[in-house]
Length: 462
Image 1 (tube, rainbow, N blue to C red):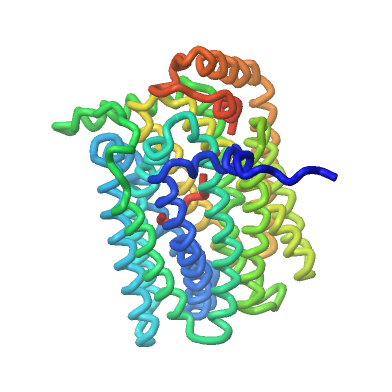
Image 2: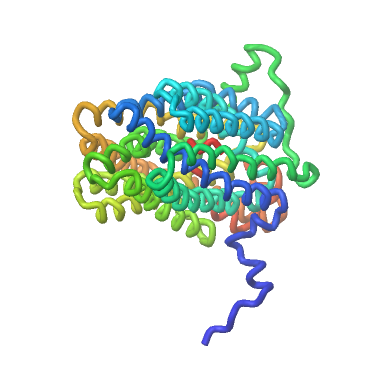
């Protein structure tokens, strides 16, 4: 019989080592509550748009409104993330997002909401996200230090996708049993948890970072952008995940645009079934995020293979009329999507030097979230013209091709991934910093993750 683990062994378990940092525990707890509201609003908003218009094309328009600003302004958000105090910036962005959720609740509860209102509110939220997303991505390393960033990012993915399991299921049941406005109210209230978490953080425990001079003119802003973009273009370990994420997001990660119509018109399972389809995606995402968080070895091949798996699963979803099979396929969509995204995020986080972190992460979030308006509009237009199954199948096919090409690209540059991991491990053993790794020692386990791993899919506004 195997002996029960000791308390010391449980406390030392590497799967939650980022939680030893008080600031990160506050962040984690706030996210755990807040993201349930995020997913409730995401599901309810899609269903509300379909109720108001009956046309899936408008789902694409809302996606354009919400994520278009990230595509246009995201790089400038990266400059803000590098120049201004990140914790203060996040408090401001989350407060504005909370107010927008309450406005949507009031419009819906009074039955005065129109699709134009939803588009305007989505546009304003997109402007907030253009600053919030690169800032939040860059803030992780300040809370836990470089030695625990891989674990923190994986835990972020786990809590995000745990909420993806709970939030859509609750939203579907709420819409069916009460009023759709309740989902927006819960989302607004859930922001309180994450704002309180930021307010209670201890600035003295945040890892120091190089201060970037505030740009004093248009030329300085352009130079800041150029420096971040030049680093991405010249660094294969960063360029590969960004390119794969951008293309797969465009083709295949816009299923939220068409799944409401799939549930209503093809599978005929209503709002409750729609909620459970999205929850199935969350279950798959949660399991793979936990696997990454608790694992000892990185799997950089997941950047390409995850995209390919997502593509195959979407093709199955498009070609089945069975709700049960669709649930299984959406589970695999979650596994592939988060396996790819989590791996890409950690690879970038552990490769980029600290003084460029905000700008490089803004490229990542701009490509990740900014591809949504393009892909969302395409998916909505194809669904309106040729049917929902065709739209999902084409997105899956595109993701499959990109994933396989990304895997082939990884195989070509695999020695660079392995050399980077070896350099970090050697530097960690000597208590030094690997070349190009920024500041702060890296533990062996984090170095292994740095060979190619991981955060949350964009668009949550958290």
